[in-house]
Image (cartoon, rainbow, N blue to C red):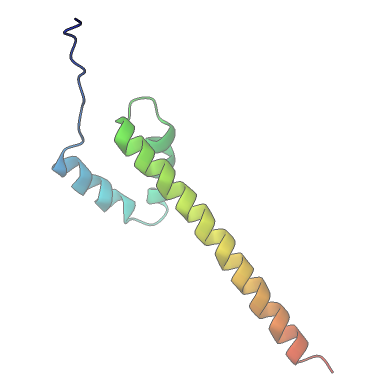
Amino acid sequence: MNDQTTQVNHVSLGEWMITMLIAAIPLVNIIMLFVWGFGSNTNPSKANWAKATLIWCVIAIVLYFLVFATMLSTLGERFRY
């Protein structure tokens, strides 16, 4: 039998509070999401959270541009004579 125990480093409540505060600051949040997501010294759970947040940001931007393009083309058709 192997008696090795795995050490799991959890992100503390205080660290999550600071993370959320930094994530609320415009422009700084995008930079820090990349640092946390792809940095080598970041806790794996925080890195996964940062990567997931970046993916959701990309999805939101794509949807925004699709809706904007649809609205713009609709307006273009309405004013065409």
